[in-house]
Length: 313
Image (cartoon, rainbow, N blue to C red):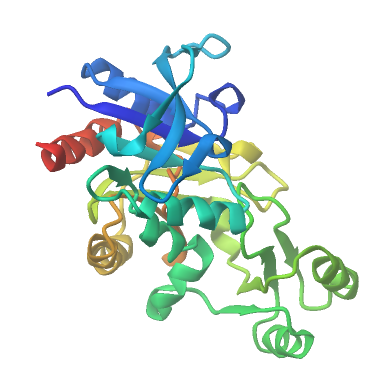
C-alpha cells in the first residue's frame, strides 16, 4: 500500500527535529514507501466545491539542518490526498480554528490526523476539565475575586495562559507572593481569554510525565524532569527526558481518559501527569515519541502508522 500523505504544519524549516513527533511520523511514513507532501495553512484555498492547497513534494532525513528537501509546489485538491497530518503550533486562535473547519470538509474521506473537529473541541487545558476526579484543583477564569478565593483555599498556585504551550508564561505564586497583583495585571493586559489557575504540585520537581496514547491505548511514556531552579519540565525549556514506567494511579488515568479519546476519534494524544494528577491532554502532535524511542521504548510512530494504514486499507 502506497499512500499520498500531506502534512499541514508550520514550515518544516522551523521545527526542531530532535523532539518533533510529526517529523518522526514523516520518517516512518517515508520508510514505508508513502509519498510525502508539505504545505502551510496560508496555502489553503476553499472553493464552493473543493479544498485546495499548494503541495510541495517532500523528502526527509534525520539530520538537523539538512532534514528536508522540497519540490516545486503544485495546487492540488486535498480530496486526492489519502492522509493529512495536522501539526500546528499554538496560538489556538481564529486562524487555527478556521483551518479545522476547512479540513473538516474533506475528513474522513481524506483521513485527517487528528480529526479536525475533535482537535477544535479539545484544547488541551480545557478538555482535561472533563475529568475532575483525576485533576488537581483547577480554576479557569480571569476574575480577580475568583482567583483570590482560590488562593485563599489552596495557598501556592500556578498561573498560566489557557492557550499557551511549551512552558511559556507559566508562573508559580506562593500564598504571600507580593508579585501577585502585578502578575494579575500582566495577564489581564496580555490575554483576552481566561487563564488556568491550579494548585501548585511540589513534586513537579521529580518530573512531569508525558504519557502517549494511540487510539486510546497506552503506547509509551517519558518523564520530563525540570532543570534545577525551574518550575517547567518541558523539554524545549531544558527539561531532561528519563525512562519511566506507569504507576497504578497513572494506569487508572489512562483507563479513564483513553475511551474518551477513542470516542472523540483522537488517534494520537499525549497526557501530562504530575504526582498522580492529570494536568493536560494534548491532541496536536504531542512531543515525546522521539524521546521514548531514544530511551529504548516502543516505536510509537510505527504504532500510529499501523492504525492509519489499517484505516486506509
